[in-house]
Image 1 (tube, rainbow, N blue to C red):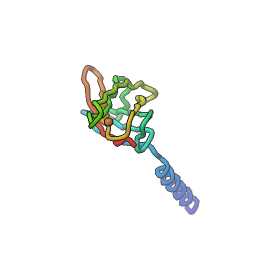
Image 2: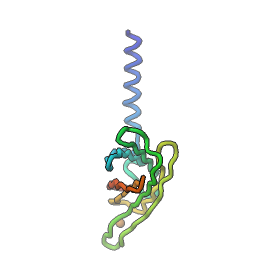
Image 3: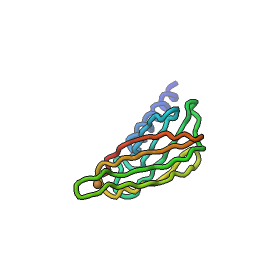
Image 4: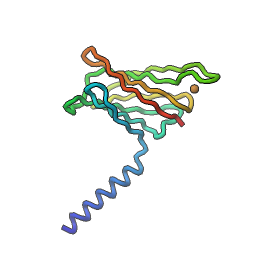
Length: 131
Ligand SMILES: [Cu+2]
């Protein structure tokens, strides 16, 4: 019983440590019947290249791996700068869609993730503050 307790406490400590060092930006959004988990490799996202992972699951919780996923991202016009818009296709690896986003400057960026499957498109919108 004591040993079990030690194992349990060790696991809890490990999880707490892991959380403290996990620097990913993680957000979960609903889009239609899909649950979409988005991970950006840096928290906060930084200027330059940021890795993005997108995991999509259907209403039953099964991974969706037959969608076309593309990402529109950019910054609206601001003083001295016209609007910036970029587009990137995500590619499937395992059960996730991977893409890299290149933020050319710090500030507020929008990210629209387009999920197209069986002729229907769902949109996931998020905003990030790039440092
Ligand atoms: Cu700008």
